[in-house]
Every structure is written in structure tokens, then in C-alpha cells.
Length: 191
Image 1 (cartoon, helix red, strand yellow):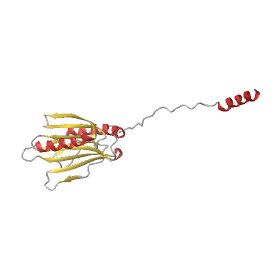
Image 2 (image 1 turned 30 degrees about the vertical axis):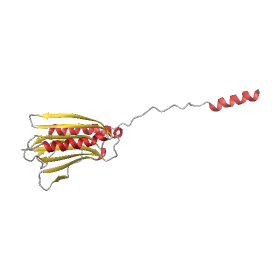
Image 3 (image 1 turned 135 degrees about the horizontal axis):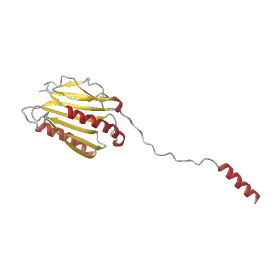
Image 4 (image 1 turned 60 degrees about the vertical axis):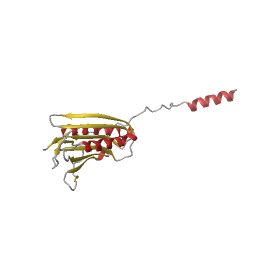
């Protein structure tokens, strides 16, 4: 009996200690700089404002016919780019351009959980369009198009340099969504 009592005492003394406490769940806290915008000065047929956090626009691609331009607004620290394409509308027929822009967005519907459409109308500056927010593991999280319905047509898409994982890129996608909406709100046609 004495040995049992002695073993019990030894076990109690050895086993006494700090109880392990589970760590609380933590979430990655991402902080992005405050949005600060400035007018982009280019030879494009339109103007707009971009976030100062984005890398300067240095690569404006012009097609052979000088009626199509490609602009890349890169965010190196977010590993993302907003690709903007401008096309001059030929013969006042905007329908093929609208169909191309809508079809590009619908291609993402296979991988997307949802596609939310938000119309954009600015009658004062003659800027009309649509913003698409794509939810889920699609290649592009945001897309848009803008037009004056007569001469100008602009499309834009947001892409990240990573395999689409919606949960991982969601904070960056929300940050850049505000930049895209600001671009849409500040586009002005030069002619």
C-alpha cells in the first residue's frame, strides 16, 4: 500500500505543471496604403485617375491601326495588374464591342461562384458601362467596360499573378475594386 501511495505522490508531483492552452485563432492582417489618386497624363484619347500606390504606367501598347491601345496598371506588392484596352468604335456600331466585353466576363462563369453586375451611368460626361465583380476561384476578380456609345470603348480586367484562390486574394481584390471604380468614375473622353 505504501508503494502505491508513493507512486501516486510521484505521479502527482511530476505531472503538475502548466496546462497547455490552445492558441486563439488568428487571421492575417493585411494593411494597404490609403487610396490617393492622381491624373494620368498620356497621349490616349481619354484621361483618368489612378492610385499613386500603383506603378507608373510605362507600357502603353498601340496597335498598327493606331485605334487600339493597351495599358497595364501594375501593383507589384499585391502581385496584380489592371489591364485596360481602348478601342475606337468604327461606324458608330458599339454592338460587337459590347458583345465581346460581355462574353469575356461570361467565360469566367464556369469557375465563378457568382458574377455581380453594377451598371455605371454618367450622362454629364457621356460615360456608360458595366462593372462585373466575379466571386470564386475565377481568373479575373473584376472586369468592366465603358463607352460613349459613339466613338470610344474601354474594357478592363483585374488579374493576379497567382493561381486563383478566392480566400487568399480577397483582401487585395477588394482594395483594387475601389481603384477600378475610381478609374471608371474619372474617365473623360478627349474628343
